[in-house]
Image (tube, rainbow, N blue to C red; front, side):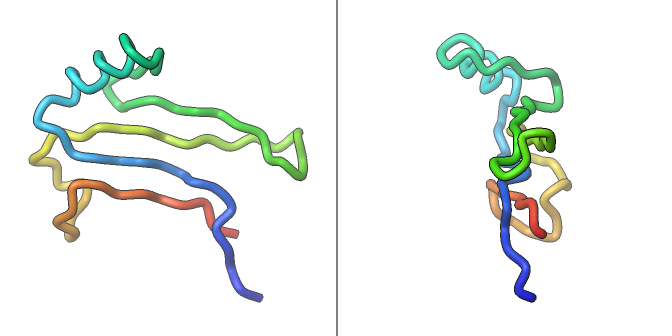
Length: 80
């Protein structure tokens, strides 16, 4: 059986000043964050008892978290 993406697990990006990014999103869009970013909880459409979450997080631009990749953005997916 072919595996498929069921949700977005996380959106991660690099920033020179993650704190300023978090402050801007909190002020203008109401997205509250801690030092690790924000977590959006949701329920599965086919089973409302099952929950999941999507992470939104800014990393310092010199992070090694994205290695060996060199891109500034990363999206992780939930896969069956």
